[in-house]
Each structure stands twice: as C-alpha cells, then as structure tokens.
Image (cartoon, chains in turn blue, red):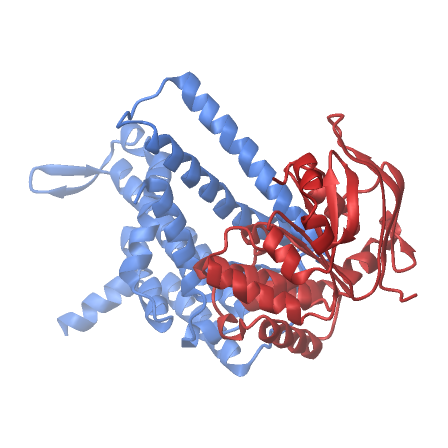
Length: 267
Length: 236
C-alpha cells in the first residue's frame, strides 16, 4: 500500500467508525461538539509550563474513546500524523528560553524544552479530542450540529465540501501514482519540472472530477446549501453528558488532579 | 399527449472553447418510451443528456420537458421531473452512507422526514439494494454502486429517467441485473450507450448521433441492422 492509498484508507476508516452504535455514537452531535470545544479550551487555558496539569487531562480522550468503542491506540496513532506540524510551532522555544527548570542528575531541563513538550502535548490532546468527535459522530452530522447551533450555512457547506473533495483529491492522486509507478521501472527520483507537471495534472484532474460531482449534486436539487435532515433530538442523556464533562473539565482545571492523585496514593 | 415528454427544438450547443457539440438537434420522446441514444465518442450524447436536466443550456433552440421550457427559473421543477444517472457512479455518490446519498435529493426538495424515509426505502428496494442502506458508498462493488446511483435518482420520483452509459464497467452478472431493473421501470427512459445489445434488448426506439447531430431515429432493430449507418456513425 502506497502512502497515498494509506491516507485514503485512514480517511475512510475514520468515516467507518462513525457508523457505530455505542453510547457516544448515540449522543447528540451538538453535545459532543460543545464538549470537545470545552475540552480544547481547558487544555489551552493551562500555562505553558504547567505540564502536570495538562497531563492530567490526558485521561479524557482515553475515557471518551472507551465510551465510543474505539481503540485509543488508533486515536493516538492517528494523532501522531500532526505531531510534526505541532512541533514546528514550538521548535524555537528550547533555543530562545534556556533558563533551567528541572535537574535530573547531571541533566538540566530548560524552561524552553518544557514549553516545547507542553505545546506538543496540547496539540496532540486537542487533535485526539477532535478525532474522537469525528469518529463517533461523522463529519456530516457535526456540520449539521454546527448549523443547528447557528453557524451560517456557507461555513458548514464549505466544511462538508472540503471533507468530500479531500477524498476526491486522494483518489486522483492514488490513480496517478499507480500509473507513474507502473511505468517508472523502479525510478524514485524525478526532476522538479516533472513533479510540477504531476501536481498540475493532479489539480486539473481533481477540478474536472469535482465539476462532475457538482453537476451530480445540482441535478438532485443542490442549491448551494447542503440540505440535512433535522433528526437531531436533544435528550436528557445529552444534558447529563455535557454537564458531567463540563464539571470534570472545571475540576481538572481548578484543582491539580495530579497532586490530588499523589496525595490519595500516598495515603 | 402526456405531460411527460422531452422535446428538443432545433437545439445547438457550443462549448466555451468553440467546439460545437450539438448541431440543430430536434427530437420528441413521449411518455413511457424507452429510447437508446447511441453514437461514437464525441458524437454529442452526453451533451444532449446534460441539456435534459438543465445542466447545460442550449446556445440556440429550446428544450422543453413536459410543457416547461428549460430556463434558469424552471430548473428546480425540471430536475424533479428528469432524473439523471451519471456514467461514473463514484461521481454520483458523495455522502457518507448509501441512505444519506439516496436521501440527498428528497431533502433538497424540502420533503418531510417521514416522506424522505419512505422514498429512501422505496428507491433502495426498487434496485434491490435495501440491505446496503447503512453501508458507506466506498465499500460497494461496481454493480452495487450503479444500483445505488440509480436509487439516488429514483428517490426523487422523476417522470423521466436519463442514464449515461449505465452498463459501462459492469461485469456480465451486474449488467444483467441492471437490465432487469431498467426493464421493470415504468418511467420514460433515455439511455445513452455504446452497448448495442442493451439498446436492442431494452429500447424499442434508438437515436443515432454523429458529429453533434441526429444521423438516424427509428426502431432499434431496423437501425442496428443498417450496417452502412453504423459504419458512418463509427459504431462498427
């Protein structure tokens, strides 16, 4: 399996998880979206050097993925894909902030390194929460929920289209890559000019395919707003889930859970 | 005359690059007819088909669907009347599950939820794909995708069904199933195809297109027996 086929498989796998019927799957998408946003806000509200506080929030993705019947290992592995991009954000902290923070034997850990780890951890947790939301809800229902919460249709339709055309782009890239490899005789390196031609062709093919899909949508009455069924019903379970999660995030934020845990285990 | 007719009145269409794909095409297809549109690649079949649904607008002449001329204002009604099944089902299936895809048209028609559900079930049963209801589109086989693509259009309860190359890329069994499905439809069916056997088996009438105009229009057995016509239209 090539890298592109793998990416397509991963994308389909995420959509596949959304067809489940666990406790998390049955909750209203709006409740799950609000909880995810609250979680991300809680993660980001910690000070950059407050590693223990952020670490204590790691328990929530593990719990929520268990409630959703999803292997946390899958969520963790998928979140690793974005780690390089997150790392880029904090890459300069260890260089510019060299104040000592901790000493382990002869090894001095600087504030910059703590901040770098903190940024990576925050990014990973935020991505994991978003992944669990998508894997237990489905992108379409999330957009539906956002629309019901008052987000303008132009944004939700854009989000749906981006999601749809991502797989179109990957499919076109996979078929082009297959054709390239079949006549490449093992050649792996190409000149920048050839790569430019590949990327240009990919763009042209994707736009042409997107045009055909758009025509299929128009022919079935699409008028610019993605029509979605209004089957969402807010239940008592959604209120309980939202309240319980909000309370748990507040406790995690206001009380240092790791310290409490240490006290309890020492007793 | 029934209201479910398709009329092309001296229709011509020129693409923005100057290519004249339809050249003075006139035809009338009446209610309940099953008509095959055959012709070589580039003969104008797909362009003709896109005019029936208002996805292309004639640069000259007029297309009328059941007393309604195809204009930007009449497009919503035209698209409810004419259901279009595209050549590549992957272009037609864009929602997360089969049920969502089949419901897409009825939801756009602003139908109540109970009616959307009824139509989804009805359309999927009509093509024998009810068991696939909750499956994601990308997991289906070629034949299943084709059946679901037809269901996405049937759920809009169109009066006229237009299909572009419905038998392409199908294995013999899936092709036989498709033919049985088309045979069972009461709709006016217009099928663009290279599959001459399919035309002969399903469509009593055939329109032969060549170079953007109608080269012949008549009973399918007669036209398919005319060797020189088929050669002129690059079908032999």
